[in-house]
Length: 384
Image (cartoon, one colour):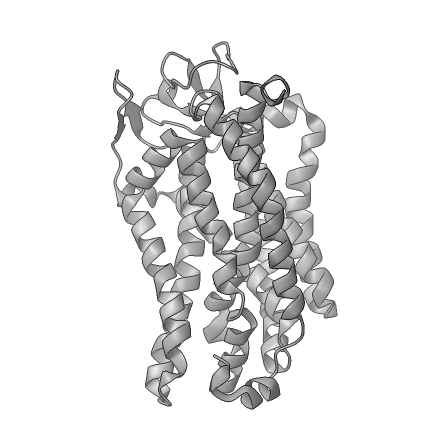
């Protein structure tokens, strides 16, 4: 019955959507953790203010990183070719991300172990690195996915990556990195304005208003660059066998200056997604100014979801294009695991994902409330 309802094509599309949902979930949850870390030197001037900022994310950051682990596992199991290329080709970039992310738990645990100004200041900068560096590199990765990555497959489907770490730092990659950093800093500011009290919340609202406008401008200008054909997109020109074997060889892919707009031309109503990707950060900026922290946080989440969704919709069905051998590009229909694997994984997701979401919602409900200098001081060493 399941195999009849969920054929190979449907399963591939479901897992493409699920991959996007996981990426959005990671950006919406762990994104404000990274944003708070990147904002720490700018919104908190005293030790107690820094403790206020840190304690807004201290109880939840670890659970939020489940989305990162889930994303890596989903790519490994559902899209093994994508996993092999991205985690090997982007190895040094991934190493920098993991190094930065490892700094965060160490800083959380060790920051308050010594009552030393220099000690705490150093760990605060570690939190800054742990927030800013991943936010930047994730955007660089997206920029390179849009530009195309230098790889190809041998006849026995062995992936060969031909790029370097510095090759990833191209103008488009760095531009998307800055857009990603601005987006997550906006989200971190929205979280601080929502969760903190006093000077930290005030400074976060002031900074967030500016960064939200920068996010909207960077995203909109990126769309203009695509429309003007400043960089090319990839278009599958051969017949697509949606239920065919997972073999990236044998198709024809062309590089076309307007290819990343093809899906929006074919289905005009999809344009609402990038439109909201511009409008939502602007609403967040208005919310920061009006000090409507709840609505600001919702607008920030909507903006992140629409910005990430825009990239996925523009690239579909391409997942990772090859700049040197376009015909070897990975797509939804030729880079997935087997039908049995996708079906069994979907059953697991249907059972366990609602449990994870329910538990996460319960945790946030238990930890509901503002963090102030008074609550941090009264908690003593029990707070970060």
